[in-house]
Length: 217
Image (cartoon, rainbow, N blue to C red):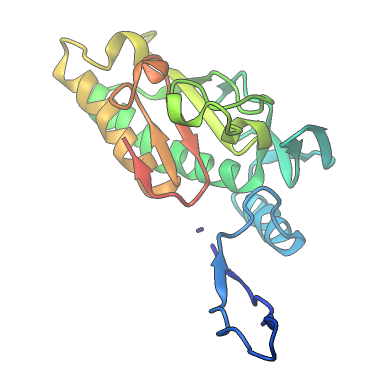
């Protein structure tokens, strides 16, 4: 689930006195991840249908400079309730579903002895810049294009609530291992995964972003 390079040819310019400058080598630019292609979105929506989840397709729209919804959905039912989740890019939604079903739910049962009852998210879309990084304060967050999901906690059917804020360094080794395990799994499904190990801004949540950056911390 991951993508690609557009090649832009630079024009050959001529200098004065009839002398030609040396041609400039073609420059490779990074793929534009802010707007998925119609083909990518159509394939992703087909994938969601094959996963037998309930979702609504949301209309594309710009919401501000560097912000907007393109190829987004609202997940209605993925088999486990998810609180506070609004618009999310289809690719991020697909990764989130796989993570929930194949990592979080099995890990909760196998490591904590209880089925997963609910995931408490802290939202997906927000037209804002990156927070917690002095170098990137002027850059739009993945949340600005609904391409990131923040997860704060997990509720088990036995009544326990495991939160990133309170349990990342839990005295219970099984709880600590559960959180470390699902982070490791998220790193295989999302491009960027940020946790309390990254900085203080992520002390209370896991940031899951479908950006192909291959950054896990």
